Amino acid sequence: MNILDYELTVAQRLVLDRYTRFLGSLHPTFRNIPVVFEQRRKSGHQLAVLARDSRLEDARFNEQYLQGFWGRTEDVRLLSSGYVEDLQVFTHEALEITRQTSRNEPIGLVDFRLFSLSRSPIWQLFPPRNIPDLIHELALRFYGLRAAIRQLKYTVVEVYDESFGLKSVFLRAMDHRCCQCHTTPTVVQELFRQLVTTPVWDIDYSNSNASLRASEYKADVAALFSAFSSVSSRMGVFLEGLYHRTDGVINELLQAKSASRLGELNFNLASINEGGTECLAMISELENWLRK
View 1 (cartoon, rainbow, N blue to C red):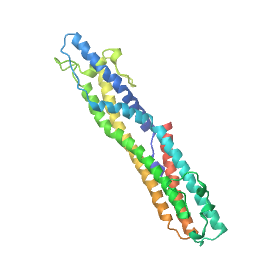
View 2: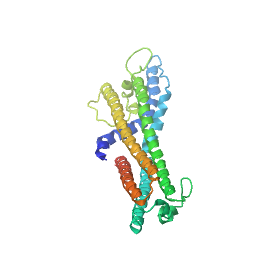
View 3: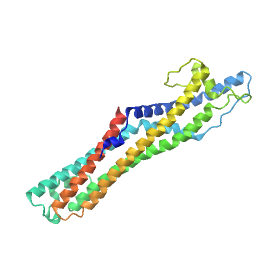
View 4: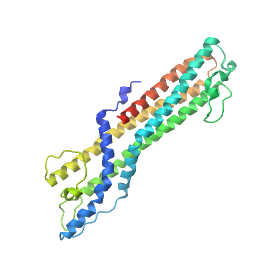
């Protein structure tokens, strides 16, 4: 595995952070829209109304998902680390048993209780009665890891999909008229007329003019949506690669159950360990990227 094929950059992490902050700023910004409508009404204009869009609620949930994503990824890394260690210990013990017996020793003649895994206090289904049962237990543990990875990917896909709706809601609201009798100023222009209603955002504006600042704000957020789309797609590809590697470990473990002799089992376990190590390296890379 070349982990650089899935490399996540500092610039991509900054996009993720900015998008998360933007989601947190959406509701305060939208709460100020009725304020500017009322200000226009008091100035003698016909009151404007912006229809409520239920997609705006996605912002709150997506912000929470992204804020908690590192913690959930750390949990998956710890799970992966434990299961890979179980696999490595099992492999080491199989080699030790082989050295004490023979590569040609039939699996059925080896006491499964020689493996420390047989003394585990927790089982995914039931306590083992032989070595194939122990291998099946390892496979079940990686099944659990795969399910946790799938949940991470589902979160990324959901936030990605809903970003398109949020972009539509945001741009439509910013371009909405501030009164029924005039097409201008737009909502975003009116928001920037007073400090109290100006959206909180992290760019250096080129000018103090309210209309220009409004245009720069809207353009920057629109660009952020595009950048986030790219980053979330990259995260999805990363997690898909991790999912398939974990799936490969599971399939190899299930195939290893049919090994008839210790030498064959050792050969299979060597390959399986490589896959397990790759899984741990990838989830560690993702967790480290999120932790920076």
